[in-house]
Length: 266
Image (cartoon, rainbow, N blue to C red; front, top):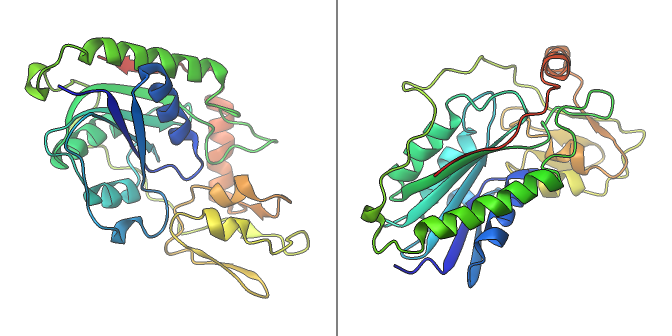
């Protein structure tokens, strides 16, 4: 079976999931690597992407122990047609809970056959300089482990003739998936005194929740609190100010300081 090509499929608002998938691809050393970026706002309306050969690497961030609704919605635009796949979740140094199992099941539903899986760590969306939570991750050590994972996947799949030659990967998690706690419909706010109206926040928002006019407006009903706008603002004008969200960030900062390491399943 041809596994000389890789298809990287991901929802990655802050590029952390994308970085890990690219690291895996570097270690795998495929002849060709193609990206299916499900992050832009128009992804749910695109034509369906059909995958017929090679190996797919499917990645998603973890939000409160589960997959974002946007990963679930946008992966419906991709059809696997029995293609073997590696599933990858990226979480902010707390836990990934049922997200890996959920992504495996979602990949199966999309027509892929997951044969390997990994959980990696990325900077938490609520991380700030004052309260860093896995700040700067994935770092070089994480990327090194991603490359090593890619090498192991290549070794495992090199003699595979059909996806049926390899069993469906078993991963941690339970079903029914754990229901995450409800969170308020809030969004980052803009400090207009330091905002330069450059439009960067709007350009990186995966749900097109931000519009630039005389002021910067955010539609809280579709904001997913990925904080891509916060992390990409060149002047630091975008901030999360909701008291409940800040309380959650402080809890994570206090309780999730111990460095967690990637977990892989082959």
